[in-house]
Image (cartoon, rainbow, N blue to C red):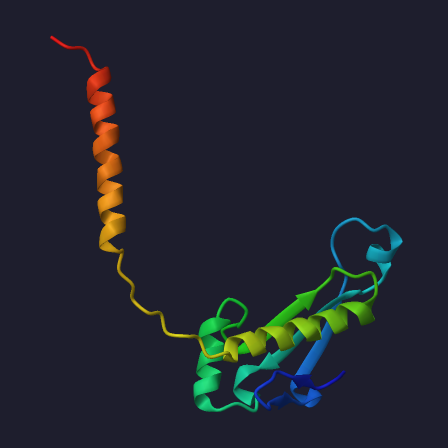
Length: 138
C-alpha cells in the first residue's frame, strides 16, 4: 500500500492505513461468488499527522464516514479486481481528506438591489391588474 499525499504538505504513511477485503455484491457470476474484490481502507483519525484543529475539521466534515471509535472508512467495489478497488479506495480517501482540510471562504452578505425589488413589485402589480380585468364586472 502507498502513502497518502493529502496536500497542504501532509503525507499519511501507509503504516497508519488498514486494508480489508470481502466479497462484492451484485451480479458478476463466479468473479463475485469466489473472489474477495471489495476493499475497505480504514484509518484512525486520532493517529493522522494533523493538528488538533485539522482533526476537528475532518471529524466535522466527514462525520458520516467515521465510526463511533473514530475510524475513517472508505470502501470500493466498482472494479473487477482487488488491486483496482484498493487503488480507487486510496484515491478516494486522499480526495476526502484533502477536501475536508480546504479552507472555506466566508460568505459575504448581499442585498437585493432596490431596482430589482421595484421591478418585481411592478410585475406583480401588472399581473394583478391583468387578473382583475379578466374577472366579471357587476
